[in-house]
Image (cartoon, rainbow, N blue to C red; front, side):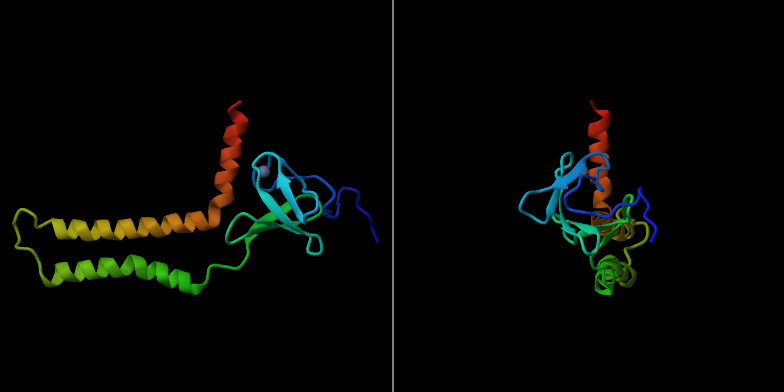
Length: 158
Ligand SMILES: [Zn+2]
């Protein structure tokens, strides 16, 4: 068996770079199967058998695997199911369709002062609902990026 000195096994007794802020270090918390970052203060639970850590203070949890040199790309525990996607699509499409149908079946008198309003209203409803969904998706997937940017600001700000 080859033993590569630069590749190490993840152990709960060592100090590792923080996978979220990439700036702080995570070190073991005494009496717990957990590690905490000294910079962004996030807490991770450790799984030595699987060589991975799980970000504990977030739902759904994010998981990083130690590949011997660094933390491999984060992944989310459990994937966003089809139900969420269908719900999200319906949330955007349904109100827009109902508004659109109302406008279509009861068109305003052409040339009247507010003839443009229902069309604009329908467009706004679509954009607003879409924005809510996009925001939710960003919240769901990119949270560590915000934490990362925040810690970078802290890094450059001093
Ligand atoms: Zn950190």
